[in-house]
Structure formats: C-alpha cells, structure tokens
Image (cartoon, rainbow, N blue to C red; front, side, top):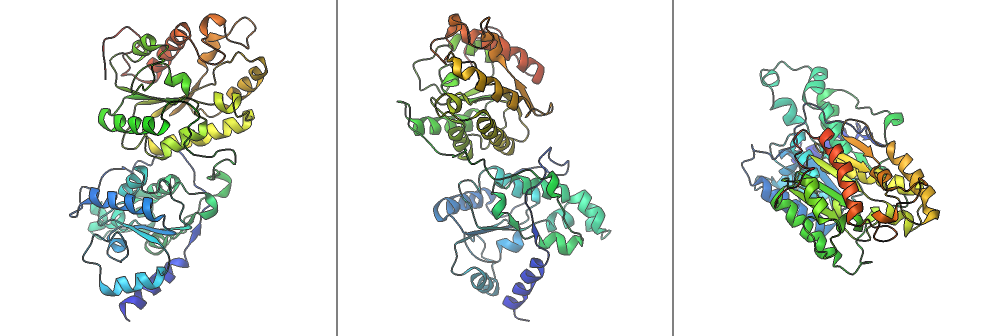
Amino acid sequence: MPGSHLLRCLLLAGVSWIALFSGVCAGELSSTLKPQVNERAVYGWNARHQAVMERNRTVKPEYVIFGDSITHRWGGEPSGDKRALGTGKAAWENLFSPHTVTNMGFGSEYVDNAYYRVQLGELDGISPRVIIVLLGINNLCGRTRRQRSGLFHPGKAAAACGLDAWKDFLTLVPIPRSVMNFLLCTYAVLLGAVLAFPASSAPERALPSSLKPEPHQRDPYDWNARHEAVRKRNQSVKPEYVMIGDSITHHWGGEPSGDSRKAGEASWDQLFGPHAVTNMGFGFDYVDNAYYRVQNGELDGISPRVIIVLLGTNNLGHRKDTPQACADNIKAFVRLVRQKCPSSKILLLGVLPRKEKNLAGPVKETNKLLAKLQNGKNIFFADPGKALLSADGSSPKNEFMKDVVHPNARGYEVLEKELAVLLKKMDAKYRGGKPAGKHP
C-alpha cells in the first residue's frame, strides 16, 4: 500500500476511536506526570518550542496536531526535521490543504513534555477549530523496563504509564469545550480501552460570558509597558511570591513599581522581608485584564511558592458586575493560574471593603462566593479586609483609607499583619513579617 494511503488509513482508523470531551476533571497532577523539558531530544528542543510559539502567534492555525516523532516527521510547519518522508509530506498536504495548521510534534516526546509545552504557552492566544492529539507511545514503550522487556499488559500500562497523565494533559488545554474534539487513536489502538470522562464530573471549560480577556488603558500609566516589565522581571528574578491585583496592589510597593504613588512601601517590605517577590498589580484592572496578562505570559516559566490574588473591586465598583458574575470571573482566573503554575499555592483574598454604602452588600456576597473556591490543598481563601471595617461592619474606618477604595499607609499596615499570619501558615519557608533591608 502506498505510504500516503497507509497514513490516511491509519488516521481513519483512529477517527473511529474519537472521544468527544466536554471537559475533564481538574485536580492534582498524577504522580506519573512530570512536566519538564525533553532532555532526550537530539534536535534543538527549545528552538522548536520557540518556532511553534512564533508560528501560532503569526498564523493563528485552524488545526494543530500534538505528538511525538510520528507527528514531527509527518510534514507541515514548522518542520525542523529533514527526516520527514516525501510520502508523509504528500499525505499531510492532502489531509490539511488548504487550511492553516501547525505541526506540534516533538521527537521522543512523553506526555509530560507536551504538558510542559502547553504550560509554557504554545496554545496561548489561539483557538483552533480542532486539536488533534497523538501521544503516549513513548510513555508506554520508552520509559519503563517492563515495557522494554516485552512484558506489556494494556490495562496495567494505561494505569502505570500515562492514562492519568493524559487526563492532566487534556485538563491543561485551554480551548472552550464547544471545540474540544480530540483524536485519541494512540490510546485507543495501543491500550484497547475507551477513555471515558463522566460528564457529571467535568467542569465547564468555556469562559463566563462576562469575562472578556483584553488589555486596557483606563489609567494614565502605560499598561502594555508595565505588562512587559512584569514579564521581564519574572523571567530574571524567578519570584518566590507574586501578588496579582489592581491599583490596591499596584500602589502598595515592590517591583516593578512604575508608580510613584507607593502608599505602603514600608509595610510591603516588612511583609515580604528577604524574599524575591513581584508586584503584579495594575491600576484599574478588571479580572478580565488580569486574565489577559496571565494568558499572555506573565506567569510563564516561573513557579512561585504562593500566588496572592486580590481582584474584583473594579468589576463591582466601576463596571457594576453582579456578585455572581464577579465570582465566576475570579473562579475562571484562579483556574488559569492553576494551569500556569500547578505546583504553586494560591491565596485568594476577598474584595476589600469600600466606602460606598451601596457596595457593602455586593462585596459581602461576592466574598461568600469566593470562599467556596478554596479546597484546603492548593487554593486558600482569606478576607483580610474585615480588619479594616468600622463598627457598622460594612464600611472601612476612615483612618485606614486614602479614598473610597484605596488604603493609606496605616491601612496597608493592617493588611500586612493579616497576610503575614496567613503566609506563615501556608509556607514553611516564609521569613517575612518583620523589618528587613533591601531585597530582590
């Protein structure tokens, strides 16, 4: 049988085992999944990763195909492999012409390495109509002595060498569920098993209708320049902690500052002591804008021990979102942060109290909804704003506030004390909470 016909038949055979996923269960990574660079590659793995990123940014492919050397040598762009046979190239062109497509196959790849690539942004900013996944053979046949010695049992191999890793990989792929069509011919053929994810346990993957990831320029500072400064700092410093927020965080202290209105620099320094930390607060940010920032690289390539999230006040106070809409947006944001930094703990803070009486109710209701997002393992919730409240239990004390929403130096001191207690409980390596000298 000619090579091109053989490849098409193999593809068609795989199609008969297509699994249409509405989502997959989120949770801890399986013990067999170790996201990392592929150290086994004889080609330039990092160079190919960058080539894929660049192509996806410029071409915006209609289709992408994930895989190992089977995909890598098939055809398409970026090729980076002279071993792609002419028959394979012809079949590739026959299959995808006239559509734009990216070959995301990497030789000798485990599922672990493909997970790492997605984690580093290979799918960021694109929305292919179909994502084809052909992975797993190297997990099955290249990673354990049991497989190399020929003692192979499909069911046991699935459990030991990659089925859990597959679930984690599919959880990571950030494509709305309406277009999550995955070709799983490798596992269907090699394992002889149906991969079933119950719809009842699968979370909705599409973003809330009220969440519109995008940049903004509602404040006088240069939003895009600050975005680039945060990315640059995180790549050079590799922070132990990051704090993601709006102007309440932006005006507190730390680096990159880009803001001469630091109202709580002394308490920031006391809170984080000798630790490397990045201030990822952006004035006037909605949750939507913070989502865009993380989606576009601000957390890529780093793994802070704790990520502090303080967002939502502009959604409630400026855009007039409902508490449910605000909480849904923050839930989606926390999910994205978990995808980007799966080993980090997340400290989700409640929306701080504001002076406007009409917003006291929405703030309280939003915080009740946010408290439900904690799981006690890697997502924790706290409401330090309660320490700012006056006797009425709704509005902050004047002595702690610079204006209707921003704390003054005394207000930041109160927040510092609250957060120091929380970080001590969450992170055994935390050494802040006391006066310190200069730090990264």
